[in-house]
Image 1 (cartoon, helix red, strand yellow):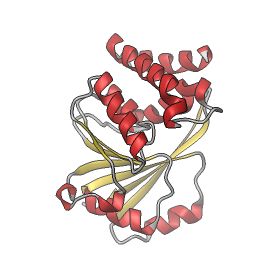
Image 2 (cartoon, one colour; image 1 turned 45 degrees about the vertical axis):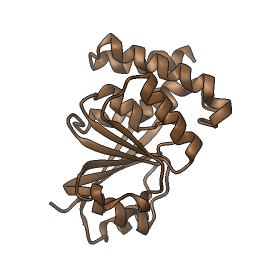
Image 3 (spheres, rainbow, N blue to C red; image 1 turned 60 degrees about the horizontal axis):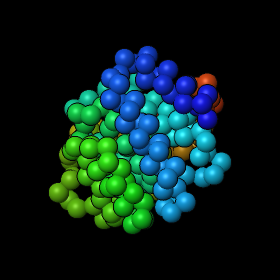
Length: 212
């Protein structure tokens, strides 16, 4: 567990974050540990490697895309991943966490309050039921633990601004999946980012850009 924490803290220090950021992650980890049994937030397999398996995995995309002053929606947020770690690192973003399971949405609300996260809204609903008020307002939609269907992509493109992007977190990229994404009418381009991370292993992102 200590090695997991050190790897993530080294990542934060490399990016010269303030001590308050580290303190929020420490508090976040404590909240997950305390509430995990009640809310079924993370698997027992990853409970002792939260710092890499969940925090680092969530935050790595910030090395490739500037998320500052962005409107971001986290689809299928669960325990708040990847949205909450991204919000802690980039506090000036506006974050929407979408979680259809009420008890998990309740936990994210609890985290938001305990960490004093401003401009953070928790939506307890399915992606396809998000109100049209949000259409065309988002810079990025991040998806870490949900299998995207045609219906989800259709809704996601409606929610994005022109030239906005869907960021899919992956352990590996399947060519057939990318080929299918390229065929969506609203897809302008796709980019694949691959990396090998100490303490985490192989990670990849598919960046799906909407037409501008």
